Length: 304
Image 1 (tube, rainbow, N blue to C red):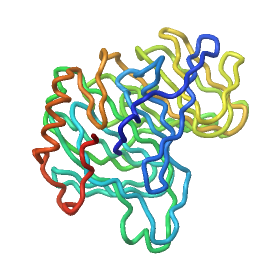
Image 2 (cartoon, helix red, strand yellow):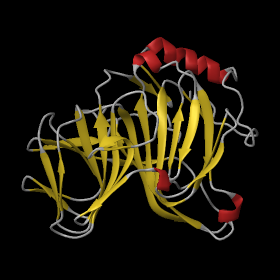
Image 3 (cartoon, rainbow, N blue to C red):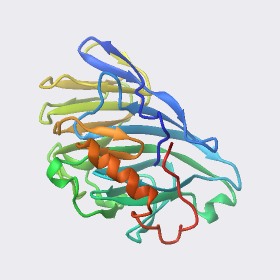
């Protein structure tokens, strides 16, 4: 999805013991569609390669309405769309045209440059539709920042699932509990969707990944005696063994991976080099990203 000027200003943060807790602030993307942005934050701009994290919904579009994120550009990052409810239709300058449903993964490697749009299909607008999910951006390792752009869709059935003892964990990207996602990534990543069925179910999270975070979507959880409520991003201290215990039925996302070093973020552009972002600005203004087949009539202008 696209941001607006100033949207990269980070939300409030606070510390709970050794766990950094980030409370997202709402951001209005226009058209009555708002998100809760957890990354970047003042005290924590990235968790592993994750540099941008929005939760949207749950919401319901009335009949005749829907999501309309016009074509906009990205460089030097990968975008990941993951839905809990509803559907989003993706198009990009490569000619990709793909609907994403709950549990699927739309993984777009922007690399040296790509533009895309995200909309609600006309068929769904007729009667209205729900929407809820996570939009995240991942920085690419410097040696892959200018890689060839690509888009890959993975259906829910293609992603490995660990199901035992009241836990259901879907591995979106990377490796967890010995299960490897088929999603192609350029760095070591932790990304999973975890559900704990009832109070008392616990789930260990070891320190195999350099950086780790947890975003609580629903329910209440307890970690080392501290209780956390929904809409919080928790960042754990490297090396700590974590046990997550449900106080109610709960759902959360696990995220993290290798620390790739600092990145610059402006509008929809991420890069290790400021001058590369300046070049991307000029390229978008000059139309050098190309057009999105099937969505050529509109685009989001470069912010002033």
